[in-house]
Image (cartoon, rainbow, N blue to C red; front, side):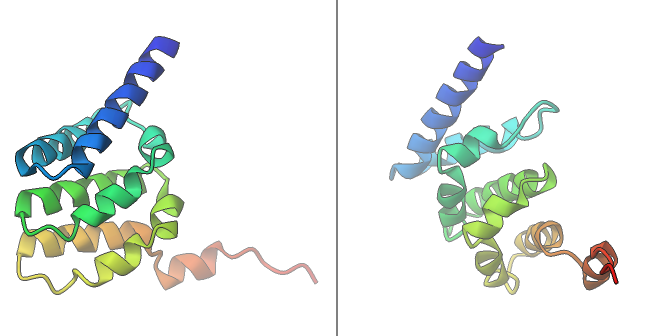
Length: 135
């Protein structure tokens, strides 16, 4: 168990270093590997969050490469769906996604809507989830 955790830590660190570098092919491959890892039933975003990965992923949303943007959106969706929306919100991901809603690419529009739906609760949900005041 401890060995698996160390392997996961090293893997995330390596992928984040590759994502921060300038080489497009290496960056695209690292992002794809990270996106595919989120499909594993046991995947948790803890290491990604701890190592500052949210900011790195968010910055990749500004890329011109469609594949990079879609993979970054998949990772954001996976983090939000895992119940870890707070770190995404704290990094300003919602504001970044808001600027992408009018993107010309329908695939990006769809993924942005999916991410925002996970990060922004509906008004009804907020109202019904609010505990009643004790009077």
